[in-house]
Length: 146
Image (cartoon, rainbow, N blue to C red):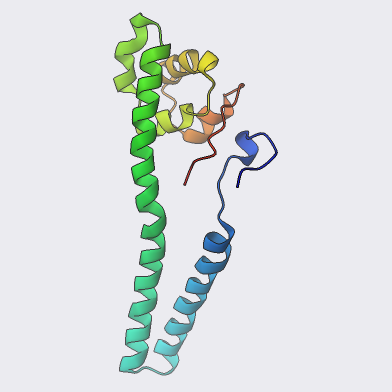
């Protein structure tokens, strides 16, 4: 559900309340409880419960990071195509020099500013996503981020 407030650097992070604030804490609580049981009342059942808790935490993390990795690949392709269209011909050869992190941050820059910003990012060696996003003046929202 998209917010009515325009997206910008300050509000662009996507939080899924049930995932981040319900399931995550429940799994961490389960991990802590199973570790406590393992220490206080060691048994084979406690070992199995602890291993299951570790497995659930691992699954929780993978369920978040695998889709983000796939989406990052798509963003990389989209931004390379967009820069191919928007950069002046003499700078197009530099598109391949942009890292995935740089391209992911640049996706928020409007078409009007992305070319100059991409060249500045390369010239200055900026690689931090947050630093690049903070330089964007005309924000292009991305409401489809996983």
